[in-house]
Image (tube, rainbow, N blue to C red; front, side):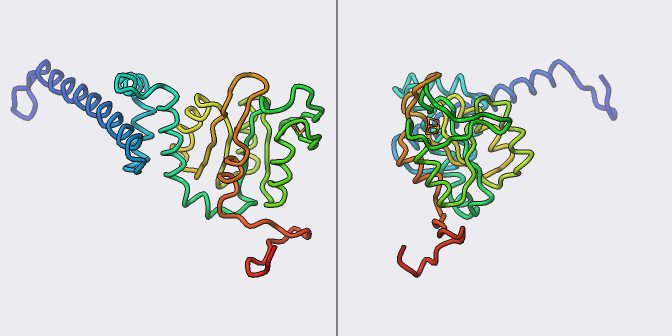
Length: 234
Ligand code: SF4
């Protein structure tokens, strides 16, 4: 091919471009793995956004390399979750309670849960059969909305209606991983706590940890619904 008087060998150009693309992929995989290992060994956060993006984009090869280095799949998920929490922690803390939304999975409910369900999910009546009721009481004290989603399709509708500026979620590792793509893409400050035991029913979470992370930066409200004066004793 002749371009501006220069003879260009198309095969050569494609060869160079392909070599650059392969080089970038290899570099991305190695960098994603190196950043994940660095965090796992030192607990020091280095380039959290890049780590999450590379770990998501090159998930299979990065997980394979981490596994070869003795870091199993669940640990790789935990690295990504902790990175995500570190990435958005400061921004999340600044978002007021009425602009936050909490998502809890319905699998945390007791199998005899009497709560009614509508298009905004399950409405816990705090019957005491599972830990959700107690968490709901705390959320009310802080003034944060909680949604218990019976399925993922409900979540976009809630986003559209309430337009949250920050989100907190409890979910299994694969669901947090899926949500992390969306969160990084939308750049919404998000925090997550993984289930300790996952499955379809009778799952478990560390409720103390969930409360600590979900209500970061908030003050409890008094009975009239106003924030407590931080200078007065509670
Ligand atoms: S505490 Fe709420 S979510 Fe749990 S079983 Fe009772 S009504 Fe259902």
